Length: 384
Image (cartoon, rainbow, N blue to C red; front, side, top):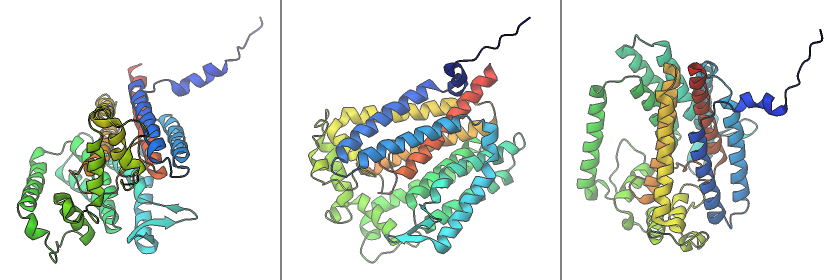
């Protein structure tokens, strides 16, 4: 009796690679990517190859997302310690041998120039999720204390560079893991209350605290200036307050409907500083107006909520904590960027996901999306 072996088609062989992708998450990311390409084409019209480079960076991020999505969460967990230790070692190397640009030492030359702090945006939630997975069912206060130390080490080194924006993102993702792991509200309430009291005192005594010659022992001079500029950007409208003022003018001039694609005067007359990177939301708001800004915010909210849904449905503690932290990372990116451009937060170097120009940030976003897809696929496999 002859045995016939069928030769599976290419579609049949490739199908397992695409099974389990979270379609709602994929759709909203594509929508944000299209918005990013449109905005980059307009804001980067006279910036050489920025539009082409932005598209290339998106393709690289998409490839990374696809590859990482094939890696089961169990294997991702094995990368937690090596990636964290490597990232920490590179941050120490930056402190000792780093490259200084514009007063900040954030880069390292290893044949190519890299920014090691970007690694911690992924390594930090991985490490803390691994830590709490290993202590599932037997958490003690000491475990949360150790998690705090693991978080404080890289955040402290990044703050020393100084890089407040990246430090905030790493801190936010790490705190999200600790919170989702079960940290009591009673322990979180005191620092929150202290922060609110500090903000209230700063607003009330802004004139005295921001006077010339007054120095705050906690923050560097430039960080203190950014906070004081946020409270009163008109104090130095052509200097430190220029970014915030021009961002608010651009967003306000867009009105409800916007000036139209490629019609932004503040953008194309180069009044908006860093209009393809940190302040690209101002260019978007000018051309697409309040309606466009609300739709963009809705897309980011959907992305965060979808990531939180994946976290809730995750099959184990590691996957749940990692997905929750990545959701908060996306939220922090969008909230801080839009907040600083709109004049409600100090100006820090945080890009708007999928919209701002930047290869390293796009790679980080691709890795984060790949991990979310991997967790979503593992949930479907468990259910089946």
